[in-house]
Image (cartoon, rainbow, N blue to C red; front, side):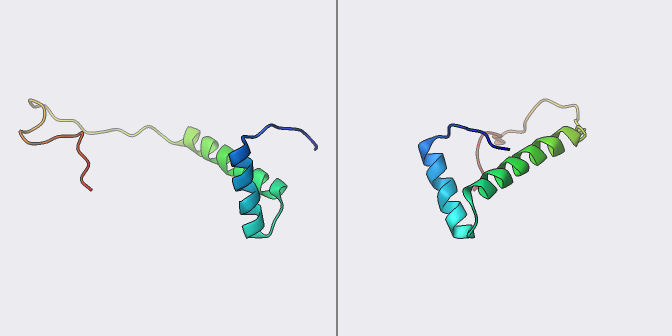
Length: 71
């Protein structure tokens, strides 16, 4: 099917570079990216909610900061 879409100029440049690196067409790159994105959304909808175990208490222990990265 043929259609027209408007893409951000930088995004289009990146997609063209990716197509060139892969030795494929821009059309193939766009189709692959769309399939991957749609599959991720479909998979995310099928995930069951996670049950977290909680305990009674008075909150965090002294010195525990959940906002600090452990890099």
